[in-house]
Length: 158
Image 1 (cartoon, rainbow, N blue to C red):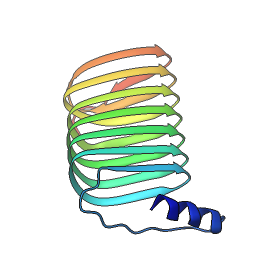
Image 2: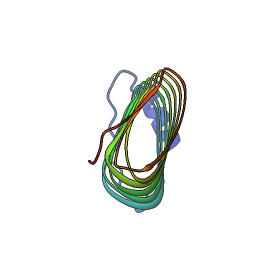
Image 3: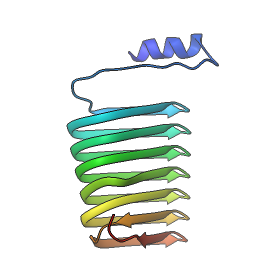
Image 4: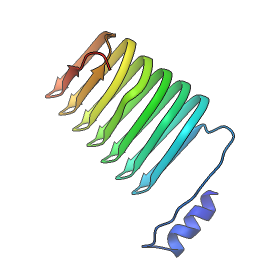
């Protein structure tokens, strides 16, 4: 699949390429550059989302024990659903929106000027270095470590 995608991107440079995939058990999605990915209802034990560049990922019905997100660059990720735990790493000026993703535990590490929005029920651990900000819904036990001009804002119940 990777070789096929490389062939198409080099052969059809400047043209939009669309893939429609049906998979039984999605474990991860990795997008580099200006691509985008969309997904409807997904149920899995663990899902890894990686976005680098100016692309976007939108998932509207995720159910998982764990979600791991890595966002570099200026891209945007929007996720909704329910997870036990989400681990989020944002570097650059990207945006992560998970205001409709209920999670028991959330860990957010942000470096740069990015923005994260999460919903945490039990525990929320935030580390910010730089100008970034994290907004959160819920009333979790909050631990925060901020260096630079970053900020954390509680938004109350979702």
